[in-house]
Length: 327
Ligand code: T6T
Image (cartoon, rainbow, N blue to C red; front, side, top):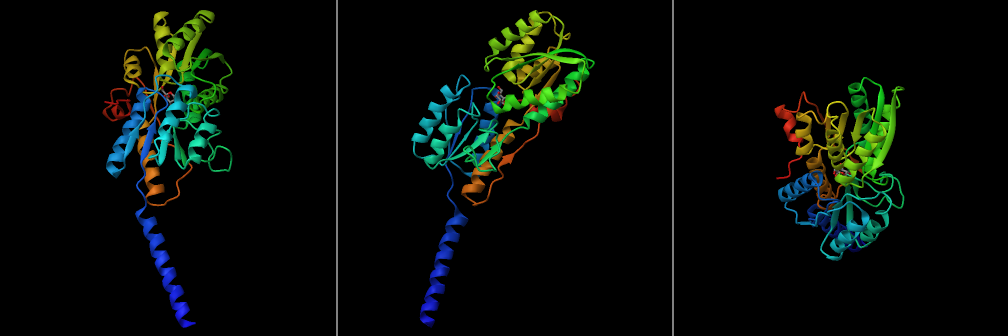
């Protein structure tokens, strides 16, 4: 009996050491970065991912940067990456909160972990069981809050009265949907401000420009415009400049591209919200490392902040870090 007990203790110890050892060492995951689109914001996320992978000694595969936004372009890229057979975790920004659930689930079922950055699937709450709660985490800006704050700042700029217009990208993309909702919520506090329209440019700058030009023609008394992402905002200010209304129509924009920062300096844009894409990228890789190598539980949501550029602070040395520069 004693011998059996000793043997049992020994077996338990050996198994414990083995399991503990595997856990402590962990497997370094091979990461795939699958951007949602080719734009300076996504390049900055990619830069954060690449730098952090280098620092942590992780292998990285970078998929192509799609030229257009949408599931029809994104899904085949994701599927090809999954089919490689050597990827442990895919970091991606789903281009639709609904249409990407099934394709990402199929990839997850192949044994590949998913981290969503910038945009989420479903309602983005991966902490409660649902058909879309399988990703490890969502890392992105508090878009609703950003929209609320933009509304208040734009309201101040236009004297809390008049017509405003929103140029955005798609009705099924979590990031911009929240920005518009936050903006509407913020504007609901100003009874003398009317939102005369919301248009969708599908992330195509020329379309944004045409839609804003049409809105200005239909409502010549528009005094403010919110462009919810870089292509919407860049198209919006160009339409306003072409209409000879620069400075008259106030423009609040999202995403600190060099183009928008220059436009801010030149008085063609009045406010720029900068997200923190580099930090989003580094956090995603850290999460993968902690999960695979350290066996840690990952928070289901991580929210880097944002920064507002105005003409008053645009040249401050400490503000320069927030400009998207992917060189
Ligand atoms: O605004 C970003 C991103 O946050 C959004 O989800 C899509 O558009 C951008 O990539 C800018 O083009």
